[in-house]
Length: 243
Image 1 (spheres, helix red, strand yellow):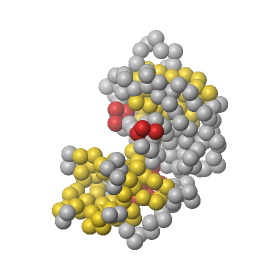
Image 2 (tube, rainbow, N blue to C red; image 1 turned 90 degrees about the vertical axis):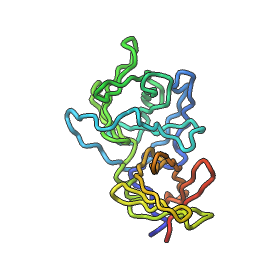
Image 3 (cartoon, rainbow, N blue to C red; image 1 turned 60 degrees about the horizontal axis):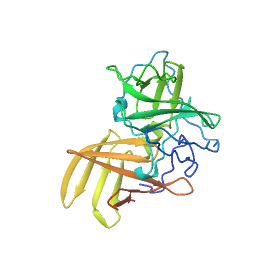
Image 4 (tube, rainbow, N blue to C red; image 1 turned 180 degrees about the vertical axis):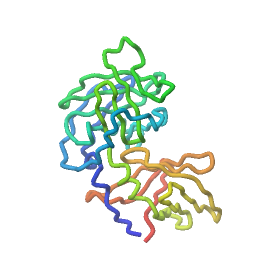
């Protein structure tokens, strides 16, 4: 397998163009810098008139490569990169998520969020001037019923294709491997024992292996040319594609 697999063309922005979105105590951004517009094609969500919620926003990972960077993935209208977008941050509210909207590079609105029984993400209080009613089709695509707008933070199928049917091995222990299957399952070999679970692309730069009762989250590290270099996790473990 080629360890220089290319990033999907649907990646929202080039590595390094993601702005820093600093968290305020309420969980929303204090300031924002508009990203440079990259001419990158993104997959447009299926234009279903009234889509049903298929992904629980409680499970949503806002983004960031390494959590202490305080950065969030940008969700563009119809998946087209530009200076107008929305993003989410972790927050101390009922849904655990804060929503912010940026228009022409400037913060235009935001609200703390709550979740309905039907998995709709809505404003936490009726007094909020920013009204939302968002459903998620998956971790990368959502629809706002209030503005009737589709948003996407990338081409999830293209991201999945990066890792489907590949094998990755620990840099300092080639017997510790992950066999990542196209059907969403993963097999880990560790100290001669085999463990099975599932995998998911959680954000623009993170993959999650769920094995037994554990979540192993890895940052996806890209080269400057856009190829996948390796995976790394908080315990300084590095995994690379096996030839």
